[in-house]
Image (cartoon, rainbow, N blue to C red; front, top):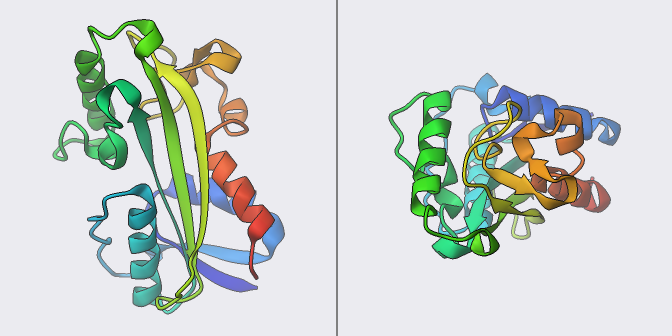
Length: 200
């Protein structure tokens, strides 16, 4: 069984990916099981940051590495918050406080934007590197189209789920049961591409 390090300390993400990739006969291990600092995400795109994280994890562990980078793009804000989605309102907050602050800032910036112009999408890029020096990382991408609501709705999910309206289901992402969201989301789409293109 091939061991692969997941370039994330997020246990929820680890569990989701372990379940999704269960048929691939690999052992996915969180980087939290190794003692090294997280990568400095100083890329200017989701692709660059995913590669930076995967390469860093591979360098530190000597194992193949899998990383994802994801976020929200809002057209009326020229793609903001984009790669800064997780830290849009700052960094010195707990996760729940951070989510709330990010959503408040986003809604404030969009307060004068009419419904028809609030188009947005979640983006996810997954990068797989066979080694730290892999010259051709496997890059998989998924996007999830929607619009931004005028107020938060729903109790499920995290991040921007409470302000992201899903037209196909006529509700906020945070109003979808997790099992349904996980068949629609940007990460699900990127993972499906990964499954189809898996190189091992």
